[in-house]
Image 1 (cartoon, rainbow, N blue to C red):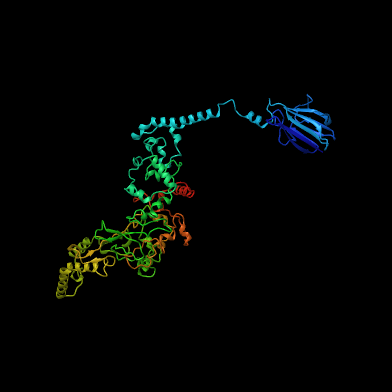
Image 2 (image 1 turned 30 degrees about the vertical axis):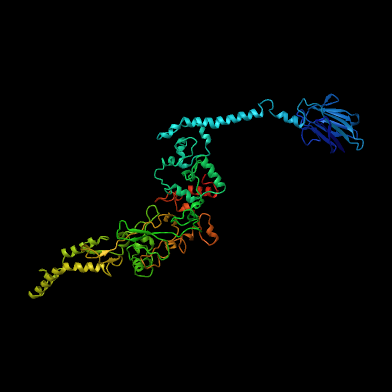
Length: 624
């Protein structure tokens, strides 16, 4: 069995639109719910108001489901059995349903009409009117103007007034605005970084003039020790080159609104969030340095685009002349495998690091001092400074004298040693020693000793002793000559010439100068490389027999920096195999504001460095 439902709606022209559908089954619901067979969009009708049950071909039963009545021929009922052939009229809310029987199919028919629009009817336009605020609020145009005015007051006029109220604070030292809300804070694009968190309520510290971009002098008010990358800002802008495409458009807009290029804030962006200042990507450096020679043809700096693939050879600073030990002559050279450095020593690393020669044998014999080593290790002589960045200068008395003793006399239980590094005092001590002393007195000249009878033997011994005492001071010259010539303690380690003065007996010992930092334009720290052996980088140390060999590594080759450091993007990995790749952007070794300190990036604690890496890898912008 089935039901036929005809929904009739009126057109604007007055005509009718009939939408018919067939509902199969013995039962059908009438209600506001969309699943009902007779769907009535009327708030006066329950979602499932009544249930229609077909009893036979001509009779149906209609029963209210939730106790809400409906009308049958003007009479309110909750249950009614009807003969569809009689044409009864049902009313649910403002909808009238006329019953009938289809002459062809003999199915019961339900013809639905909306009776009146006075209540909340089912028509779409009426339902829209029910839930809108039309007539209760101003019109769209008036509302738009009102909201525009409110925005101008709240986010322009009020912030300007708030800023102007404290504008004079920019001229007062250590002055700041009181705590609380200030309207111009609505202009903030984000929280200040950790470095500038103390300026949270002191906008005028940076924004000195209203509607004027932050200038460098505002930064330099606090950052007094920070110098420019180069003094000539115009040359800096030329090195960067003129932007193209959309970059040229943004530069033109910035210039129009008085935002000149080359300011501090182009790199050090603020209001990027309450963390570390937004990281600067390598691209910031390479925009200038990757092909700078094409724009600054007179520059002496080679182009550098990426440490792994496009970086010039390292240029260590080595000692060229040691005549002035306090200020030795230095020169910067391009690294190569055969670079030499004149440090004033004859010392050879291969001889001291051997495990088979006499040095190693001496170490093994002194197991208590060297802990059972087979030979000397690097740390026996080289010790890092407290920071772990560099190594302290090797001091002869601490590192060398345990093997290379300078002892020349013993008085009781006290040993007298020559003074290292002071050749004048060495000569004076030896001359004084031989002038003040004498040869051992023969035992047979002692009156209490047994001796050969007669005076002849005693006279001969006394004559020999007197001659020895007379010529004993002259032995100082022989001792000095032995010390400063081949086979002597000084000659074995130092370069000695016969160009000295009388105070040094004519000998001149070349000054020894130790280089503490070879790469002054880039940063290196031993503290970050402690998990490696010294010879992993200083590969020539175990084999070199020339004290002038430069043992610091260069860019490539065994032990070179690129064995691990592959640049920021790791592009080197595509062309070579690196066992332990380390991403190495420009900021790992270089600082924009170059000084003797470590780059800002390497000074970050491990936790903040990890946060920096995450933000960089997430592609956060590094400059406005």
